[in-house]
Length: 158
Image (cartoon, rainbow, N blue to C red; front, top):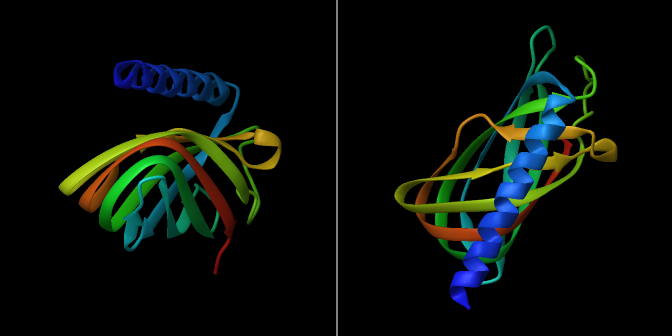
């Protein structure tokens, strides 16, 4: 039973990643979304983490967002800090302030004992037109193991 669950989860993650890659190929690279946040406590069925984010794009002022990440699935432990970065792909080369606002979803997996890593590919925004692909793996400090589905809500920040 455990083996079939793990196989199904890996297949879903690979399918999500290949879908996101195909989606990104139809889009233009807009910039990089960098997010940082504080402590998060993982419960058996999931967790909620709040982050401050900045979209950095050539020729545009920094665009700030507040992010809420919700994980559903196995999530055990305490994370002291998190740093994530995604390459942002959109249907057009230039987007306006607040245009990344919306809901994103995808598969997620991470592990840490001290300093750890994780990765996630997310699709969403206005009419699911934005693809967020990991620039590099997420960094986190703490003791945590997580696997499941992840949602990201971006709201305009200050």
